[in-house]
Length: 70
Image 1 (cartoon, helix red, strand yellow):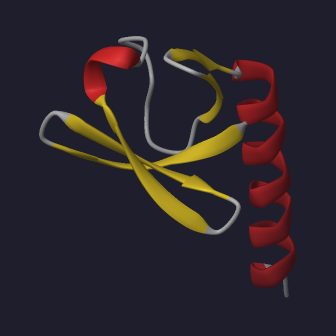
Image 2 (image 1 turned 180 degrees about the vertical axis):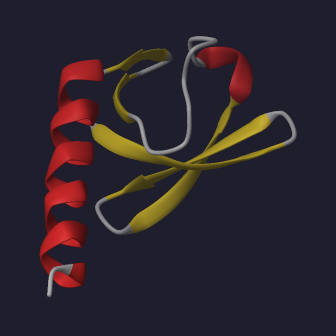
């Protein structure tokens, strides 16, 4: 399953999956994981999908530019 890192709370990582949040132990995540990263969760194997994350960030930047363009 795929999700987006919503926030860190102490030793927990809160991930949004299909509009709902789920808590995972921080120790399961790679150290480079940051808020907003798209992650692939397969049992206890969690991988940050950097290409997917970058694509999403660019889409959001474009949307924001369109909103604030005069």
